[in-house]
Image: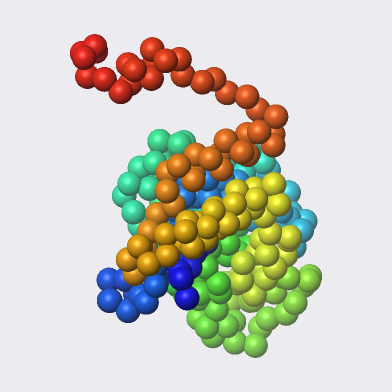
Amino acid sequence: MIGGTEDTTTGVIRLRAMEAAGVLRYPIVAVNDAETKRLFDNRYGTGQSTLDGIIRATNILVAGKRFVVAGYGSCGKGVAARARGMGAIVTVTEIDPLRALEAVMDGFRVEPMAVAAREGEVFVTVTGNTQVLRAEHFAEMRDGAIVANAGHFDVEIDLVQLEAMAEDRRRTVRPMVEEFTVISPDGARRRIRLLAEGRLVNLSAAEGHPAAVMDLSFANHALAAEWLARDRGKLSNRVHGVPAAVDGEIAKLKLETMGTVIDEPTESQRAYLASWAPGT
């Protein structure tokens, strides 16, 4: 085994934990952290395919809906932007102050999930963490709330708690839509509609990312594998970033396929950027 490449945020987190514990046995290239992966596959791919999955499963009108996006990483940014672009009123929830500040500066309302749970009509978890939506949130949701996950497997929505709260009051109302009727603390009966069993809604209820954005990610894997093979034995058993030159080359190739031409710096501009002598 020469090495490996990893495409997902959660996978990279696990591999870095293995590195810290000293149990990573071969070098890994964190493709997920490449600019040409994170800024495009995660943002534009997840954003579009998540909305596609929700619409296919429910046939809702997104415009005017109160959309709650849990997590404002690269994927969450894409989901929030696409929902707002289709006319939704978007609220973001976060645990990271930097990401929360970014969401505020991008023009989104930022609230704790305990508050957002009472207001939202559609909830999308995009965090990579577990139990993001749980019993205290289900108890506060309005009747007819739709919950979906586009982040990490089926752990972001606490299905065990949702099933316990609904007891036997659950039914399938459409393909990929299961309705749970829960009794809230005030005694009201509320229906919560879970999409795709809490699994990745963009893969389960839609077709995943379009090939026109996945090609960037696959190019990273291919060139990272080439680097691992070429430098076999030279890389330590840790998580490595994609070389900046590879990232830049992939962006250049993608622009060429799109028929987009950009400027080249002049010789004097190159010299200016490389020198301290001009002083300004």
